[in-house]
Amino acid sequence: MKPAKWKALIADDEPAARRGVRQLLAAFPEFVVAGECRNGAEVLAALENSSPDVVFLDVQMPGIDGFEVIKRRTVERMPAVVFLTAFDQFAIKAFETEALDYLVKPVSEMRFAATINRLLKRLQSSERVREETILVTTSRGATVLHLSEIDWIEAAGNYSQLWVGRRSYFLRESLQLLEKRVEQNGFIRAHRRALVRLDGVRELTRTRAGASIAVLSSGVRVPISRRRSASFTAALRQQAVGHD
View 1: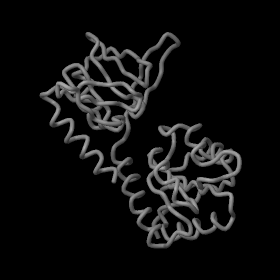
View 2 (view 1 turned 135 degrees about the horizontal axis):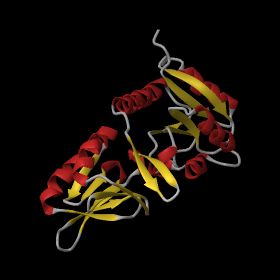
View 3 (view 1 turned 60 degrees about the vertical axis):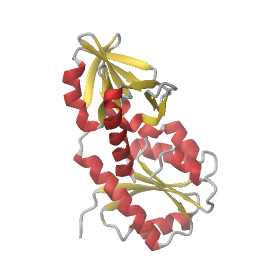
View 4 (view 1 turned 90 degrees about the horizontal axis):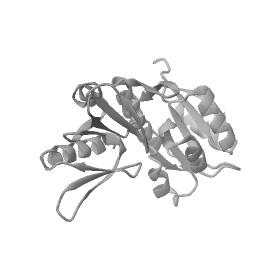
């Protein structure tokens, strides 16, 4: 028997539903159930305390529902999410939160197995690429940034300016040197003075003149040079395929 490698959290206000997920998960020894939650408040506490790799999250729970859990925790700080619900009308909203899957109860063994296979691919892929962190100095001291937090990076003389949402940090390292450190973590050149994290791109659009623009999740618009437009688009498509 394979030793358990990944931790799962089961969140549903119905005991029978929690028991059903636990029974389905028992067929996959790679996973151990780290805890069960009856409502959103318990989920938020468990996410903080047990750091699960996946949460099977009921959409409708008393008090704080599944979507509100993600809103409060933020998408970036959530583990893989598999939504559970008795209804299918929440599917579009679920995938807008970057959920791995959306299961309608009662869940068949075959459907659950398909979800687990996708989940294992994501977890194993994340394990292969160890996320690097970058230490930056601020007026308050030093701050550690995870590369998954950084939306894009631009050249600033001998420094690089790292953007996290609308906030930026300066690192005394040229963009050229920094590129070698971050390219294995999904960053790609947008133009001569900018690197963009592919996971943070919401859409690609074009100006009336035909120039490509990467619209990031933060709302920032980063132009793509004509020279790099084809390779940037291809990398973005490959990224999307890898997430399927």
